[in-house]
Amino acid sequence: MGRPVNLFATLDQAAARFGDRGAVFRGEEQLHTWNQLRDRALRLAASLRRTYAPGQRIAIASENRAEIVELFYAVWAAECVVVPVNFKLHPREMVQIIEDSSAATVFASPKIAAELTPQSPVVVELIGGPDYEQLFTASPLAPPSTDPSTLAWLFYTSGTTGRSKGAMLSHRNLTAMTVAHLADIDSPDENCSLLHAAPMSHGSGLYIAPYVLRGARQVVPASGAFDPDEFLDLCASHSGSSAFLAPTMIQRLVGTGRHAPAALRTIVYGGGPMYVDGLKKAMAAFGPIFAQIYGQGESPMTITGLRRADHESDDDAILGSVGTARSGVEVAVLGEDGTPVESGQIGEIVCRGDVVMSGYWNNPDATRDTLKHGWLYTGDMGSFDQQGFLTLRDRSKDVVISGGSNIYPREVEEALLEHPGVAEACVVGAPDPEWGEVVVAFIVGSADDAELDAHLLDRIARFKRPKRYVLVDDLPKNSYGKVLKRELRARLG
Image 1 (cartoon, rainbow, N blue to C red):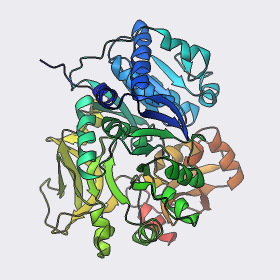
Image 2: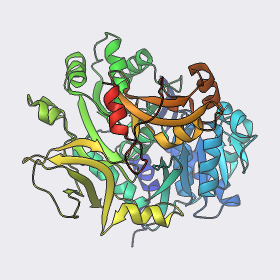
Image 3: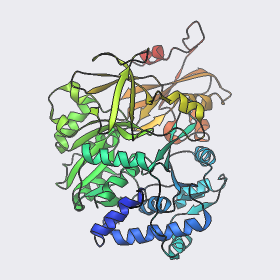
Image 4: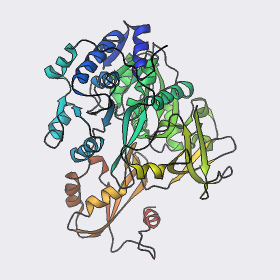
């Protein structure tokens, strides 16, 4: 009998088939072949197992770095759980995730470690450097035999309260995501490359597995960030390049005025609204290389998809949709009575399949609210057309998606209300041609913009701060005292 498959098997297969080919690159520099990557992951796994038992959570807080690839596979080989932390978060927010997950340790980049160490409740291990390299001197661990239902990744996504919730993703969930990506969205081979321009703690990191399975090289920009010119230069130097980008990143690529290098084969976009006009401009600049995904951390990257062929449509309704149900995923739109609505009617989007999480980590109440009758309730509102294309209509949750990042109004409002010059606060999203949406705060009080910016800088991540403050005499409310956010949005035009 063969051993059960966990995500480490994707690296095992790539090393067996393409062992001496380049696997991990920093910019144009090759760091490891597939054989070397496998060996490093198993040695690091052996060091982890000396201290951490199977099932323990290992947090990773870093800008994009080549070491993240080996860290993921080492954690899975040690039968532990990867807990990627968004490096854009405020250290206080990172600590919340570390504490909620009961992480045993945190691997952090030098920059993040300097900010995190004074507040971290657990030891912070520095990525890179002599101590980190010492972990690779252990004898390699034998490849693991893991039940596919075992937890592999805690994907932290903020709830409507702003407190992070850990979506529990098993090896089976992420294998289903991997298969669906290769079936629906992109079909790389060993002559292809995945460029990590978006954060590896989220979408770009989730896509490591399908590209590793096919032997496609992992390329991390030397800057560790997204620079449009650097990205296009790397596309030109790495064959068959693919990347996951937020819509705002695509707009920045278009803004360079450069044409797509011949080696750029696929850009997968998602994580926020991509307006039809912007999409048409991107296709005019770079050609028919785009695919869209709609998903959530709870059903990672995989609910519906607008395939490359769909982008060739001259129907704006299709271009404005989020595509059709993904392979292995059943998607429905339900009315208030919990039954499917007819084509064209708006309801809540739900889905089910092997890709859907088992629940939220240590949060049974949120799990019950989200997983009902075998369905994942997304909180998003939408409608199907007669061809099965899903269009997002509104969000039942108040999340603002700006530049591909989720920002939850209540979290910002609560931070604002800690300022003595703020009596009331209400945060909404306003459409923005560059960011998709930007955060606007309506304030009852006397504080000025500079005071509020400085106040928030000590409390929440920089990207969550409002782009604009509007002082008002009072907030519009209904008879129950609930603020009428729709009315505030209308004031913004």
